Length: 79
Image 1 (spheres, rainbow, N blue to C red):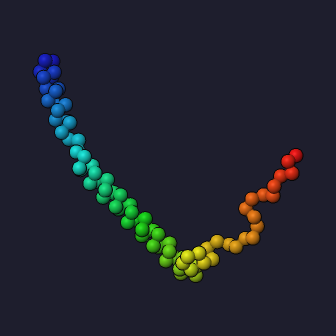
Image 2 (tube, rainbow, N blue to C red):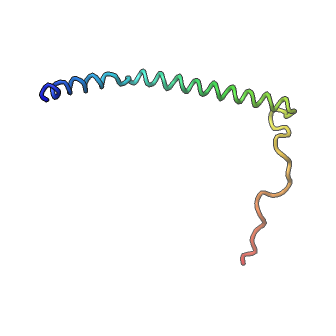
């Protein structure tokens, strides 16, 4: 029992050494963010290519329907 109590602090100190430091975690997060950004860029490029193939023009074109109706309801009579 006494031997186990003497070994326990050594094992705890050894376990603390296994945690990655800030630079390692930062590099991992930066590479993950960069990979996500590249995937998003590829998805946007693919959707723009599909939109151009469908005949939509860049800068508005026929993406939204033209509707002359007001977006807000008429004013209330106050009753």
